[in-house]
Image: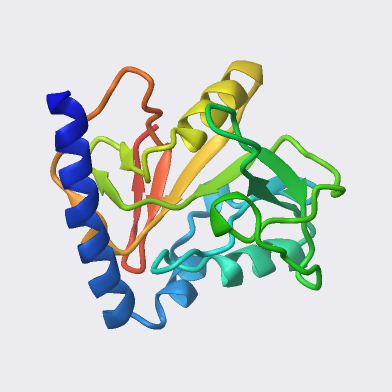
Length: 190
């Protein structure tokens, strides 16, 4: 019970910091492309899962469009239901994005599903060990655990530098990210 309380308090504080960072850095999305490391830049034909920015999340659209122009296959996550991993559905920049579960824009349910090689992950906060604080549904943790069990995947958190904290409360099921990319720099954890 105490652990859940700590995470909820951390989420509230992190959301405020992210909202402030979002307002203070309107060009942050452009810097993600510049700061994305060559060593994990997707190869032609690789599958990259992005996300449709929600509220004050740092927007990955420039990065996703750049990957698309360089012949990566793009997928976006879809929430199927509580307690389930995400489904990664094919998306192209001209495709419409209807609102899905939780009001998050997602490709239509008829879109082909893919298994990503690179997953771009939104977050509320990240720490110096590579752990992220999400919204509490566990969707990315379940999805990354499954993808890692089935093969090689690189998990890259996208955030504002102001979302960095020293230490987050972590549970056994929490998945560590391989990288975090901010508007200022890239952090490697793997």
